[in-house]
Structures are given as C-alpha cells and as structure tokens.
Image (cartoon, rainbow, N blue to C red; front, top):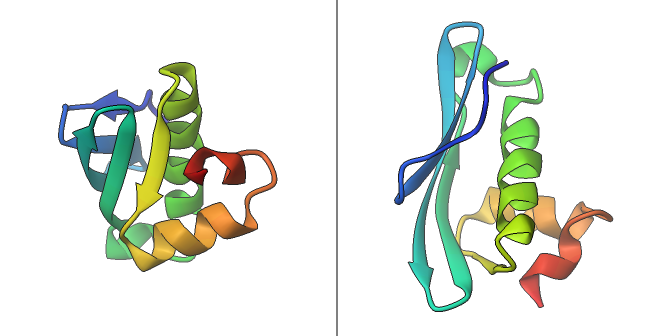
Length: 88
C-alpha cells in the first residue's frame, strides 16, 4: 500500500496497482466528501475502509471536520469509534 495522496480535490490510495479515491470539496474548516470509490478489483478487500481511515486521520491532523455527502462515507463515519467525532 502506498501513501495517501491529496490532490486538493481527491484523496487517493494505491494498492495492488489499483487506486481507490474519495472526491471532496473544502469549505472553511469542513471537508465535504462527495464520493468514495474502490476499483472493482479491490472491492470486498477493505480498500475503501483503509482509504476512509487514512483520509480521516489526515483530516484530523489538519484540524478539520467532515460532512459526508456520499452514503458509504456517512455509514463508515457513523460506525467509526476512532473518527466518528469528525462529523460534529
């Protein structure tokens, strides 16, 4: 697995030659996660989970909050004991 990349509009994480990503927008101290996607080859492997954990850690380190627009991101954050507080 490679390092998390932040392009300014998308978080990306490479695994097994494939890239999972999360499109986002930033407004003030908040990141709006619009869409999270793992390539078909990585689905069912936990790739989107690892991406969400990595981007959530990055967002916390930047002292920002998350508003999940994407249903997967919203469900992931609701279940997360470590990062669920980032939505408040």
